[in-house]
Image (tube, rainbow, N blue to C red; front, side, top):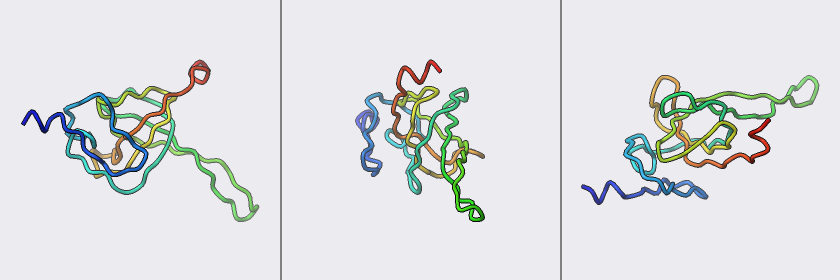
Length: 122
């Protein structure tokens, strides 16, 4: 059983490397039993105050047909953060859909790109 605990799963998403840190979270896509499917989203972390969860924000453009112009919009979503992945406010995260883990959480963080030092000071 100890041999399977250190095993890292391939989650099947291109350009996503498993983290070096190992965790024992059953809702981790790399070290647990959580399967990922559906959309792959990118966003910026806005809050890390919850236990094993983050709030991330995605920015997108929406077309206004009447004026034939685009407006910027944003949406905040919640995602599960496994203990083997470190994310701070301002980092860019890659999030993948999974089965519902709670009332509002139905996605999991699979990769983090740290923010530049200049962006954190603002």
